[in-house]
Length: 183
Image 1 (cartoon, rainbow, N blue to C red):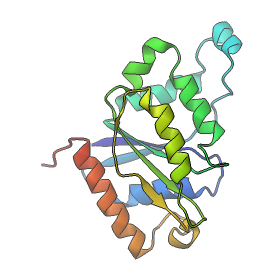
Image 2 (cartoon, one colour):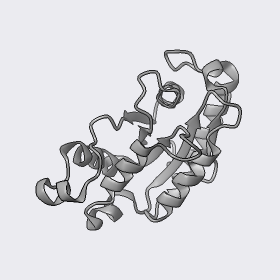
Image 3 (cartoon, rainbow, N blue to C red):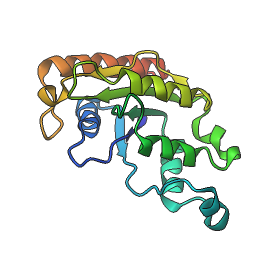
Image 4 (cartoon, rainbow, N blue to C red):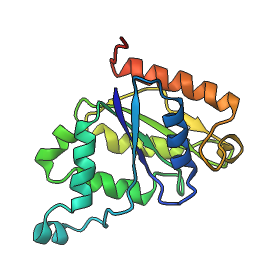
């Protein structure tokens, strides 16, 4: 199974990027998790789209998403919502409208998030749900929320034993949800 995990944070030492690395480390041999970041995606501007078309960074991300069997969005929480950079990428990926369904429709998608705080990324994921519903993805109902992530993920993304067990359970559940049968 090929999964594309997108980090919704631009920070070099992002806890959400580290969470994706931890998922990559925990993935079974028959499961590949590739990571995508949003660094090169410009702010959406309809004038720019009309004049220049879809930016190359958006087209490349879309190609990777279409090729993937499933998607994971790792989103931090900024001011009780999803980060603007993630919302901006979703705005671009919904353009042109005829490409939105091939990019998202019926694609298994899971939400996760890591935060140094004690409440997890509940509000960011709730905001993401509102946006993702229009894309008609198959949304995995178990959202992974990692609070106090700076204590559970080291700088290289390696999780402590408790988080490793939680990641294993969550990832196995998502793979089952996505309908991937292991040989």
